[in-house]
Each structure stands twice: as structure tokens, then as C-alpha cells.
Amino acid sequence: MSTRDYLEWHRPYDDPDSRLSHRLRAVQAQLAAALDHHGDGARILSLCAGQGRDVIPVLAERADVGASAVLVELDSRNAAIAEASAHDAGLESVRIICADASSPDNYRDAMPADIVLACGIFGNISDDDIRTTVEHLPSLCADGADVLWTRGRSAEHDLTPKIRGWFRDAGFEEIAFAAPLDERLSFTVGTQRLTAPPGPFEPGLRLFTFRR
Image 1: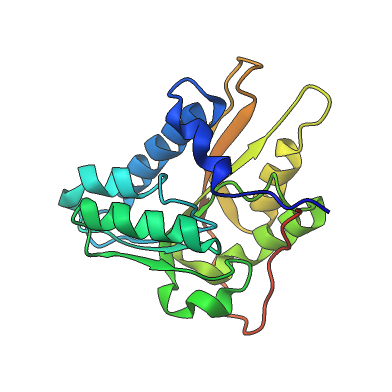
Image 2: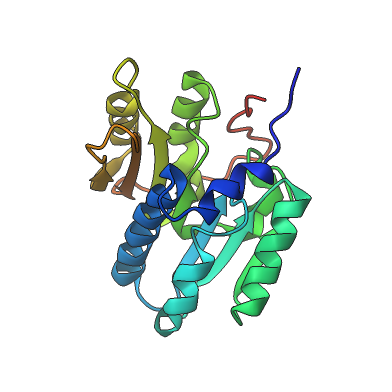
């Protein structure tokens, strides 16, 4: 069975007109809005963070908010790129953890977070795992935290209505939802704010398993 090369997966970001680049800008815009809401000292947790492109450029431009971030990435090559990018941007408050983001035990000290990014995950795991992840996200969150998420869609299959419902059932209120009409782009980016009490940390929890 073939295994996706997650370093190569990032290459379309080099094309500013690619689907991934358009999605990246949407994620960054919603992250900037979340930082505006949470203000000084916000704690960010990014799961399956890749090369840190969602978070690092935004924090480099928003030194005024004094935010800190923990980026969790399993691929050591991408984690090294993220670490170098944070260093080059002078972001001493950004920490990279090279570990499996599906296991919260690996980043226990990064919780609770004010902003959690679950981007690039929901299109690579089963529907049941998406629902499980959404149901357990409150255990990663501080009171009133924002969760940013992404998911692709097509005319034949659009899971986003169910995902939005699962967030609602888990105690979140939708703050933003971007779904470009251009069929070539076919992505969605959402921000959900926790309105229910945060959940307790659950040792040994596994959120999802990536499809290869």
C-alpha cells in the first residue's frame, strides 16, 4: 500500500493560485480574527501542523497580541521546516513538537488552548473519526476557545453540514464558515467557538487514524 509523502504534499503552496494556497489564506484570515477576539497572550494549538504555514506567518505579523503557539507535526521533515520558519521569523513563543497529533498525551502541556487548529485533518480520516475528534475537542480547549477546521467538498459528497452539526452538538457556536463558490477550489474553512464548559483531559485518548 502506498503512503502519501507529506513533504511533497506541501508543494502546491508554492503556487499562489493553487487550491491549497487559497485555503491557506482563508485559514490565516480566520486565525487573525480569532487572535483579535482572544487578545493578548492567546495560546494556540495546531494539530497536524505541517510546515506551520497556517500559524507562523500570522504570528509574524501580529507581534502585538503576544500569542504563543504549539505546533504538533509527525513528519520530522515538515517539523524541521516549521521550526526553521519560526526561528527565521523571530518567534520564540512558537514551539514545535514532532509527534502524533491524534494522541493528546503528546502535547498535554499545551492545553487548554484558546485557539485550536484542526486543519488538513478531516479530509484524511474516516467520518466516524471526524465525529469522535469533534466530540473530544472541548477537552483540548480553554473556556470560550475557538476551533478552526477545514474540509474539502464536491457536488457528489459534502460532509460539511454533518460536521457543523457535530460541532453544535458538542457545544460549539459557529463564528465563521468560508465555502468558495468556485468549484475548482471546493474547500471549506470554519471557526467554531466553545460555548459549553471545556471537557476534562482524557489520558490515553486517540482522536483519529490517518488514511494512507
